[in-house]
Amino acid sequence: MNPRAPHQLSSRIGLRPEPFGAMAYHFDTRRLVFLKTPALVELVHSLVDYDSVNSAVAAAVDGDEHKANLYVTALSSLADAGVICER
Amino acid sequence: MNVELTKKPVPRLVDQLQYGLSAPICMTWELTYACNLECVHCLSSSGQRDPRELTTDEAKAVIDELAALQVFYVNVGGGEPLVRRDFFELLEYAIGRRVGVKFSTNGYLLDEAKAKRLAELDYLDIQLSLDGADAATNDPIRGAGSYAAVIRAMDNLRAANFGEFKISVVATRHNVSQLDEFKALADSYGAQLRVTRLRPSGRGVDVYQDLRLTQTQQREIYTWLMGQPDVLTGDSFFHLSALGDALPGLNLCGAGRVVCLIDPVGDVYACPFVIHDEFMAGNVRDEGGFSKVWRESALFESLREPGAEGACTSCGAYDACKGGCMATKFFTGLPLDGPDPDCVKGFGEEAMAAVDQSHVPHSTQDHSKPSGPQSQRVSISLGSKPASN
Image (cartoon, rainbow over all chains, first blue to last red):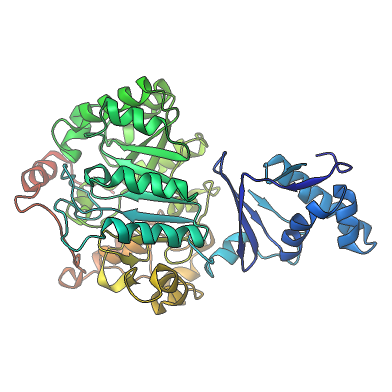
């Protein structure tokens, strides 16, 4: 994942809200991915409103760099799983 | 795969899943009780169609609901789903609404024309049932000629360029030594192998004692599965995780939490292996439909509560095996908070010896054909050796 590039939730993903966060289903790979906090789900939905992953993360963490790193790592693994993609 | 932000504030996924989900992940829908085979271990005692089975329109309404609930795919079975005349209509309707279908079939009706039609559909998985790596092992369980029928169906799928399908094996005392042969067979077709646990459900109760794995075989299959991460198991062997490292997948009974069954007449059960009144949560024809049953039934709510203190919770292996399979315990007459009959620590054997056989629950439905596979049952009993452990 290039964190300087704009991203969005992939159109090949079904995202279902759950008490813990959300469950993502990839319609091509047929794999389930669990997003384990509501905050991460919100961040994924917000990607489309920002010109880069970094700016979406910055808006979500309010200056907390440790948290920002965790978010970028989480989004990176979601990109690997095809949940989010460049737009 | 799980994406976490931090380790600290987030409970383990398995702990969260036990409180249930907004909709099932893995749901099974038996489309009909009619079947052209009479397998001795049929978990739904299938054979004859039930006159109350859902109509095409009712089935489509269920699909609409599943789509609205974002149930991403459904495991379709039976009976034999291909005997329903509206099978393709329902299949295409579901796929058109982004509800993927994985259907199980015995392959008898999967001729060249059907294989071609299936190959044209996306978002579809096929699972062919096979219980022996040769006819001599398979046919006493599934019926004369059933091995040849599956091979023919696999040939048809290959000729139609269907792509990867699944071969689904119920592990028994007689076929567990053939795991490598099953794998080689699957590989030769570019297919994926799936091996699941035998349960004493439906007609399976009649053959369970003769076909269940011995303790030695349980250790063998555990070791084999640990070395074959690509083989699917439906997470059905989680009771074996008490032998060492956990097997991949959800090591938890998902009944009513992440799993459920809709039977051919629309009754909703906690899992495909507990077709019994005690585990029926409602019917899709009830007001509020499937959604209300899933979200509000008293049965499902009780299954999502933390487990009661039982005989197993003091055992050191409890975190690994979670007490095993609810359905297996129920149909062998064991208390649900006690050990699984196939408990790898041996507590199941002790518990089984104490069961009052006159109180073992019997199936509350039976759609077996009047003649039934009685003759096969007898031959299996005679042909099998008594369990050594």
